[in-house]
Length: 334
Image (cartoon, rainbow, N blue to C red; front, side, top):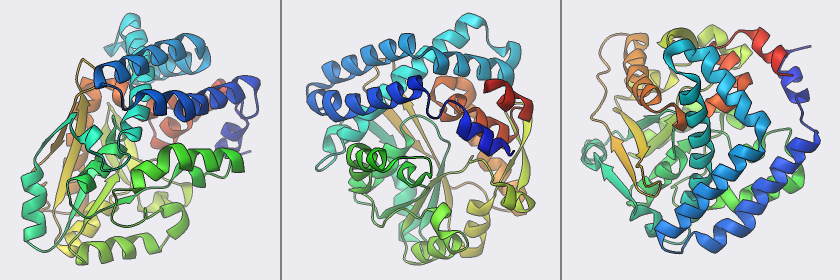
């Protein structure tokens, strides 16, 4: 049996998982719409309280995050630090649901809370006529910030699979997720998401067409590599391990002469304000592997500084596929 099949069996139909899903939809369908457009201090205070409740209730997820932190980072963190990171992980996820809702309409309700640094790099890229590829880690409210680029008036298209396309999502779940999450994100994007799981070989062609139209591509690039694509993957130093990733973003940038910019978003201590930083173009001289490693070095730094904002800690399968955990960890998690 494949590790993917084992992961699919990992509590997928358990009572706890069903209750977690119902709780998530209740929060997003009822509570978030009620509070999201209240004064930001109040809206995000409710989100933090919900995150604290979720942290106490969802013991399985909490312990999985703590265990994965210990397995990957070892003694770099104390047990107390790992528990604080896990709590902040839940708080952050709850706040991100409010971020998404505040993208409704013009999106200004969220834009007012996010300081954007580096828009001049996007402006310069578009003035040069080659578009740009904006790379991010799966870190913080990156998906909402991709949409904020559209709110600012720039034509942005995101490369990434929607959660509603996952095979293990029931039709009702799929409908609700599109309603409470995806529709708000897509509102400010220039074209529909380019979804590799659907497009397969056509992904690169669609990305190239977007760049030739002098538009922006945004994507999170430290994504686990499917088994059939591992022959095209490269080995990269990341969090003290060697992981396999696809350098396609940099390869395409070199082929199209488009710049690569790095986006990182950080949430401030009050939980409602954020800072989105867009870097100057990453040097693309040398071969694609060397240039790609430069990008990954820039993406690793914020994860080390604030681990609670990295999405993959909750996903043991993803950490195994990346090469940050041995396969045995997946079997032990079941």
